[in-house]
Amino acid sequence: MDSIKNEVKTYPAYLKGTWQESQSHETIAIQSPWKHDVIGNVQAVTQSEVDESIHAAKAAQKPWAKLSLGDRGQYLNRWADELEATKDEIATAVMNEVGKNFNDAENEVQRTIDLIRYTVQEALHMHGQSIRGDGFPGGSKEKLGIIERVPLGVVLAISPFNYPVNLAASKIAPALMAGNAVIFKPATQGSISGIKMIQALDRAGFPQGILSLVTGHGSVIGDYLTEHPDINMISFTGSTRTGKHLSQKSIMIPLVLELGGKDPAIVCDDADLDVTADNIIKGAYAYSGQRCTAVKRVLVDDKVADELVAKLKEKVENLSVGSPVNDSTIVPLIDNKAADFVQGLIDDALDKGATLVTGNQRDGNLLAPTLLDHVTQEMEIAWVEPFGPVLPIIRVHSLDEAIEIANKSKFGLQASVFTQDIDKAIQIAGAVEVGTVQVNGRPQRGPDNFPFLGVKASGMGTQGVHNSILSMSREKLTVINLKR
Ligand code: G3H
Image 1 (cartoon, rainbow, N blue to C red):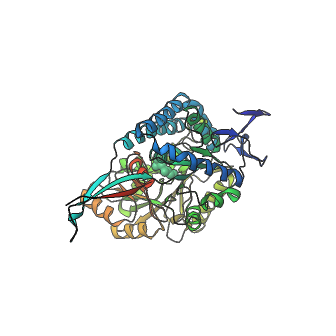
Image 2: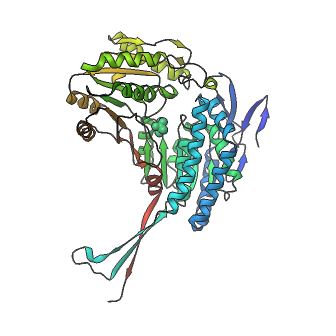
Image 3: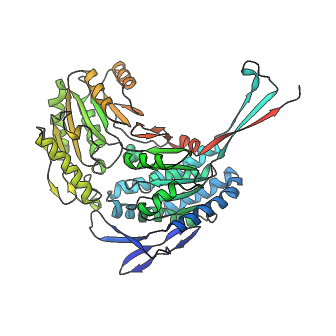
C-alpha cells in the first residue's frame, strides 16, 4: 500500500474507496517536529479529485443509510478492532508526526477505539419521538406526529494537528453511525496519522466511496470543499481564524466548530492549593500546552498567590523536557513558527514588567516550560492563546475582578474554579461565559460522552458522542391524520 522512495514513504490518498496517487503528481513533505527530518509525503489532491470523491460519497450514502443501525455498527466495531490490532503502529505515527509523547499518543488511539465502540452503542440506543396535536390550542388528538432522525448526506470532517486520530474519529464515527458519508480532510501535519487510521477503516471493509480521505493544500482544496454544493454539513476543529473563514464560506449548511480557548483557572482564597497546583500544571503543560482546553491563564486571589506560585514553580521545574520517545511532558512545538509566536508573547510580557518565575529557555522549537507572574491586562499573554508551554499568573483582589477578567476574553471554552465552598463555586460557574466549568479540576474535553462546546470565539454547536450524532442528523416529521 505504501510505496517506498529513498526510505521515506509516499502515502496515497484514499479516494472513492481506493488508495491512489493524485493526478497532480505533487506531494507534500511532512517533517517531524522533533526528528527534524522528512518522515513521509502525502498527496496534494486536486479539485477534480475532490469533486469525484464527493460524487462517490453522495452515491454511497443512500444504500449506507438504508442499512440497519446494527449493520452500520458492525462495520464501525470492525474498524475499532482493526485500530486495536495496529495501536502501536498508529501511536508511533502520531508521535513521529506531531511530537506527542508515546504514552499520550497511545492513549489517544485507545480513546479513539473506545469512542468508536461507544458511538455504536449510543446510536443503537437513540430513538425518535411521537407527539399528539392536542397539546396546542385548537390542535387535535387525531394528529399523530412521528419524529425520526435522518442523515444529512455528506459530512466534511476537518481535523487538527494536535489530535490527528481522536479528533478525526470523533467526527467520522458519529457521522457514519447517523447514516452519512464522509469526506475527511486532515490537517496537513497529521495526515500520516489520519492515513494510518483510515487504512484500518479500509481493512474493516466499508462500502466503496462511503469515506474519502483528501490530503492537500488548503489554498487549493480548502474553500473548494467548504463551498461544494454536495457537502451537507461541516465539523471542524482548529483555529478561530479558520473557523470564522469556514462560516463565511459555507452557505446554509450546519456547522460545528471547535476553536481556540483562553481557559482561566480561577483560584479562590479558600482553595486547596495542592489540588489546585496539581491540576493547573497538568492542565497547562501537558503536550506543551498544545490543547484548546489547556489552562491558559491563572486568576488567583492575591491573598494566596505567593503560596500558589511557589507550589507551581516547584512543579514546573520538575516537568520532563525533551523528546516524545522519552515520554517527556514538554516536547518540541509543532514547528518553529509556533515557537517564535510563543517566544514573542513571553518577550512582550517581560518587556512590560512581568516577573519570570521559571523557564524562558529555547532550543529551536523546544521551549522550556515558562511561568510568568504579575501579568497585567496590558500584556498580550493576558488575552492571546499561545498554544505553547507558558502560563501567565494574574493576581486579583476580588471574585468580581476574577469574573470580569475571565469574561473579558473573546474566548469562552472552559473555566476551572478552585474553592472548597460549593456555593461560591456555583456562583462563579453561573457567571463565567464559557461552555463548561470545572470545579476543582482542570479543563478537558473528556470523558467523551459529556457535551463539549465553546461559546463566543471558541466555537459553535456541541460535540460529545450523543450531541455529535444529533448534529450530524436532523429531525424528520411524519404526521398521521387519524380518522375521527
Ligand atoms: O485541543 C482540543 C481538544 O479538544 C482538547 O481535548 O481536553 O481531551 O485534551 P482534551
